[in-house]
Image 1 (cartoon, one colour):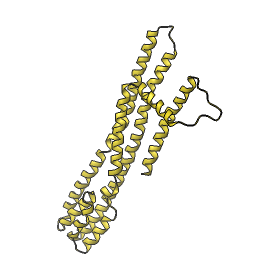
Image 2 (tube, one colour):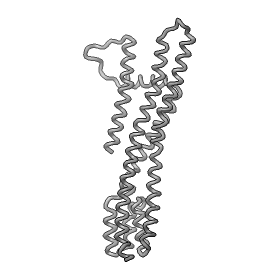
Image 3 (cartoon, one colour):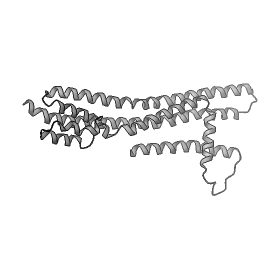
Image 4 (tube, helix red, strand yellow):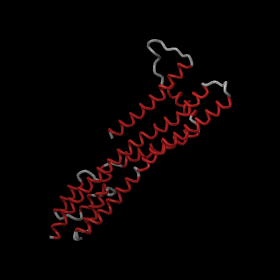
Length: 254
């Protein structure tokens, strides 16, 4: 969770730096004067400047906004769903092993009732209900349960990578459209037209690229964080599952 919070902080600082610096440049261009101490920071001014840039970016910005909201939804879903208690509840393997060694097979499913949806709980419950089954069959079923659940978690992580790849392309597309419009404006103005028209148009067009990167960077960051987290929990699940199955069924076959 600390890494996730740090990523959000970095993303916020990046967007404030990009839009804040540009907003300061605009103020100077309009002839605004600042005293030696500088004016106090105004959040409303930053928000107004961001809204102005959003409108200047055109239709592409709305698609990027949709991707950012979609990415945020997947991030929040993973934050609340990709937890150890959902896959490998802490202490469950030790408690189940204690009951198994005491021969209390019927009490093991009751132990898992509080975490019946956890992957390890499903595996332990199956093993407890089939104490006389061959170890190879239990291992196969445990592998199927684990791969199905871990695959589900991985599937819910992939959209973040897709958003991270698509957002910069959409931003670049918006920039190209904006530059085409800028050159057309200069062409209509003629050879004696104001060159600042081109600079202003290109400045507006680059907003889409900046916003596309702003959407892509956090999504790619969280994608790698969640992928690492999924692999870590998967390895932990495999370790605890294999330990239990070997201890419970290997001596039985011997």
